[in-house]
Amino acid sequence: MNKPGFQPSLKGRALRLLSQREHSRTELERKLAQHEEVPGELAKALDDLQARDFINDGRAVDSLVNRRASKLGSARIKQELALKGLSGEAVTEALAGLKDTELSRAQEVWRKKFDSLPTDPQTRAKHMRFLLARGFSAEVVRQVVQGVDEAD
Image 1 (spheres, rainbow, N blue to C red):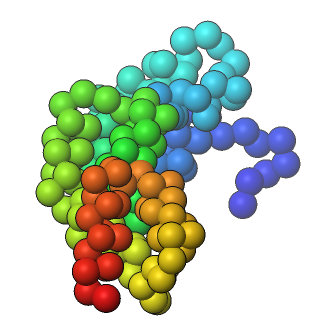
Image 2: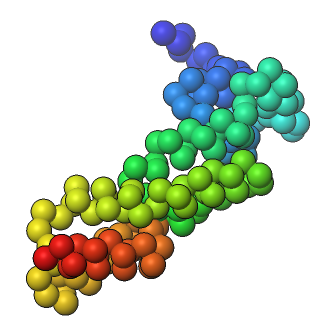
């Protein structure tokens, strides 16, 4: 374990975070800024890790999408990617891939939460709010709830 008074280096802290899951550079900067003692030290450490491909924003995008796609819609995933400072072509490609499966993912999320079909307008609204809050588009939510009603 750590000795009393021992403080890991910024690079050590970054590697510990990266060992738990993929992080974007922006996310690491935000988490480690409070530990920077010399200005520029954090940027140098992150540059080194990025040069060695320990920090890879493309992998961070893929990781987040793989972890969250089974529970969330494209809009919510896009928001989470933006909060982590991720943007660009990798994000655009990942979101385009999610659009194809949006309906089936929404149906699966709906099935896990609700056992029965909505029987009244209040219940229907509750089901719709549930899916909308998870970032599924209004059109997809409408199709899921309508499709369920058609099976009635």
